[in-house]
Amino acid sequence: MGQRKGGIAGLWYDDHECVVAATKVREAGFKKFDAITPFPVHGMEEAVGIKRSPIPYIAFGAGATGLLAGVGLQYWTSAVSFPLNVGGKPFFSGPAFIPVMFELTILFAALSSVGALFAMCRLPKIDPPVIDPDLTSHKFALFIPEDDVGYNADRCEQLLKSLGAKEIKRLSDY
Amino acid sequence: MSSVARKPLILGSKTYKDITDDICAPVEAPATKRWFGLLLGAKALFLFYIVHIAIIIGTGMGLLGVNHPVAWGTMIITFVFWIGIGHAGTLISAILYLFRQKWRTSVARSAEAMTVFAVMTAGIFPLIHTGRPWLDFWLLPYPNQRGPLWVNFRSPLLWDVFAVSTYATVSTVFWYVGLVPDLATIRDRAKTKLRRLIYGTLSLGWRGSSRDWAHYEIVYLLLAGLSTPLVLSVHTIVSFDFAVSMLPGWHTTIFPPYFVAGAVFSGFGMVITLLTLVRIGFPKFKDYITIDHMEVMNKIIMTTGLMVGYAYGSEFFIAWYSGNHYEVYAFTNRAFGPYWWSYWIMISCNVVIPQLFWFERFRRSIPVMFVVSIFVNIGMWFERFVITVTSLHRDFLPSNWGMYAWSWFDSAILFGSFGMFLTIFLLYLKFVPAISIAEVKPVLYVGKKRPGHEGGH
Image 1 (cartoon, rainbow over the protein chains, first blue to last red):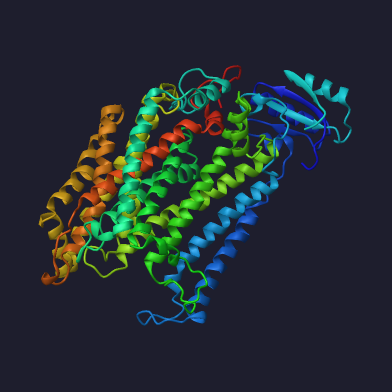
Image 2: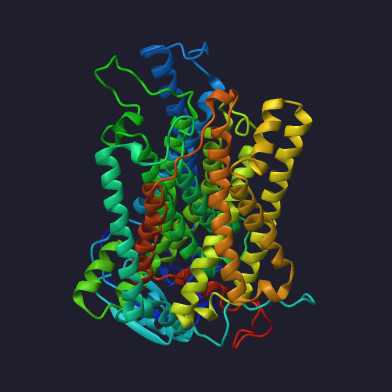
């Protein structure tokens, strides 16, 4: 999410409780808060209010590009640049060109989706600060950044505690 | 609640922390003597392999048994064998993901690692088989000063270049994307600076934000959706190397589905072989890779075994039904000609022996499934031997007939390739979590009551 910023984090030891809390935090009016979990928690996207990822459109576009690249490469090399008569087959041998068209479609789509994933998650991050090392193991956190709508450190702490947070951490840099 | 309760996927009463601890333990604990012993053995075999490949490249392909008329030999046979092994990994990681098979989570990581390493092992063979591996870049369509003269896009061998390299790239990327959150787990548990640096770099600074997970899950789904047709296309195209030719025994339309079924069959054989050993090496993994998991895979082995059995029968039927003398001869010669023994090894290993899995007792017995899986591996290597050698050695003209001249170097590269594969696989077991931590946790409570929650989930 762009620049690093401070904020307040609440930690839960149970994924369901964290999802319930996330729903409540969103209902309290916060928009930019985030959940940090060791695995994709069922229902968390809805609870935090995250829109569906646009990556499938990128994958489709890249796949279509790959397909056209396959057609273009084979057409140009076999029929334009150096037309060779191979066994009397047409220079543009449609059916024979399908495998390479298919493979390039898959290759472009797959690599672009992963590229888009890295771009959207802003990976790689160099040694980013971590709220708690157990957040990649068995703890679940909600983080409210200081620039969120109506942020007030004490009020947020109160809210997270009332939602059952087992630990509260104030961060100056996340 | 349905009346048939689901069986738990993870045994014992574990918490999320226990899962992390169990799976990270082999990566974090000092290497055991047994592991070093195995690595040393595999490494020795690998070095033996490298030396023999170097001699073959230095001297020439004549060291192998390839000759006229059997111009395709061990290199191609073993290439198809290893590529086929890889298919089970993609089936588990991609196809079963699309079918929402939750049991796949425990075995997906290792099966996919097997895919990547098997494709690496396989990829070397055709490159050497070209005879002049230093000119292998000629396989790619690159602008050159010879015209420019381009590759022949009408050739199945060229399709193979694209299929196998795409397959290798996409499987590796898929595997790595799956690894990133787990590498972050290891990073956050790291006790030393060096470990933190290495795993921190590899995990790319992953923090598990729910916004990142949202993108991540979509990309994982996309990669599964893309890998599924990809894996089917790869062995289809490998089979085109044979089927597009005019040779009796090769020129059959059944080849693509037959090859794909055989590939999945052999791959699951290798998964069972490896995972029975992993379970012995890491006893704690028995709670994750349970007998139930193994049983399901044995069922797949039997199913795909029956499919290849059907293909063997169908080939014979069509050879007879077609009324083509050359076709009939090719198949009679396969079963009763000079290479009859290879054909019957194939039939007994692939069709007869897996029938043991009709019995639950054998499906759930580790020693039995280990032995059967070894037979499946042997049988599937012989299947490719039968297809390649028996079809080539007696074609249309009797004056053209001959035998494959199996040499010491054929044995060396066949067995040596296992050294390469096992070396990489052993290193993987030590340095990377061999079960997907982030994928196993969401299925922790499948078939179990969740503590502190009413009802089930």
